[in-house]
Image 1 (cartoon, rainbow, N blue to C red):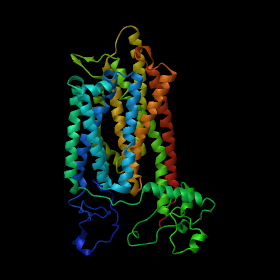
Image 2 (cartoon, one colour; image 1 turned 90 degrees about the vertical axis):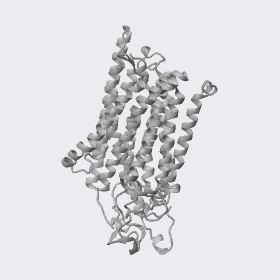
Image 3 (cartoon, rainbow, N blue to C red; image 1 turned 30 degrees about the horizontal axis):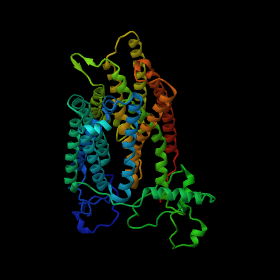
Image 4 (cartoon, rainbow, N blue to C red; image 1 turned 90 degrees about the horizontal axis):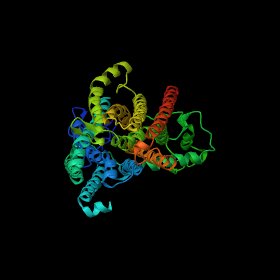
Length: 531
């Protein structure tokens, strides 16, 4: 499903002249269809009309997600009476599982169901899960057991994350207050109802969307390239890349151009036409022995995303702290602000407010200014955005380590530190997430092969999952090897753990900078051939 619309590409099938008015096509030129399987009409599908419905669904989904995630560690420690280390590990594991499952959905969307049907199925599962969670909190017996459109697309990603943040703001203020002061059942019921309503709106607006035709499995294609390259490892690569295998010209492909790259040249062997293959001219060769060069280049595109993906793991280890150990740190601080008592999880609202303020400023003011200076459509390149975000997240962890050292010193003499000292860390992480998360979404969407965009977007979510799992493992190691995070944080050294994460983040930033420099060099030196 293409709500915002992709860059225009030639139709995969020739449309008759009756589909045109005054020589200008009424239909999209990218192969998308409407809900009835007919060529999508530009005027009535896609663009911002469809985006508004998608953003509404995203808003409700994020409100529900953050209503659970932001206060989950409090629920586990205060209601289910888990220890600090167990609660932090369980929250990280829950986060990891939550962001791992989109990989399954992406595979089904790209290969079998299409994006719209996949969303319908998984939103239904989401609502059922919310219903079970809400009911479980109200049953005592259960509680006792437990370019043009390209530029628009860039803006869409910014506002997509903006709506995420609005949902997070309401969750960290209103919903968390309801959970802590009214009841967990009502606190979970509100987002469940909103998610159900947004689901119905999503279904009702199905005629406005553009749908991508399902193709061959991208995972199968990638596997075929790897296997064919291994089988042809004894063959010598030709000097002239035009001798490699590519589909014969046809009306649907004559207008496409494939750009050959010299990086990962071993994979080019999957497209070598061997003498034995030439002798069987006219007979179809198994794709597990001979692949088209376009498929080879798609696999190369995936490999180029791997270093950036790896760089995100430590970043999402840090974001996992904001929903686990940082909240536990807040529980050990003075949470009285005047006559108000601030729930530790509500400090995340500083993260949210910073994001809400920055995204419109970035999209409306900073991007046009940066565009004039850099010539980039979106102001900064995706590696530049990621680099800024990684730098800020490192500084945030260093600040939290210093804050914890100061808190321990005050606690030793019977004094308490105000929880409001956590606010700068949340604010800096808010800025960091604007640069990193939006940059990540754009990176894994724009640099993905056309038929693997759902899968590559899910790989971005997989980075969040892997970072959360990595954090859970790190907490397990800390629990077994040290006493840094005991039940009473005054007797531990949470600051040591924060410093460890900060050092890892600094090393991660260094390798990301080196990767970006090498990537830019490869782009500059890349030899491109059209055929």
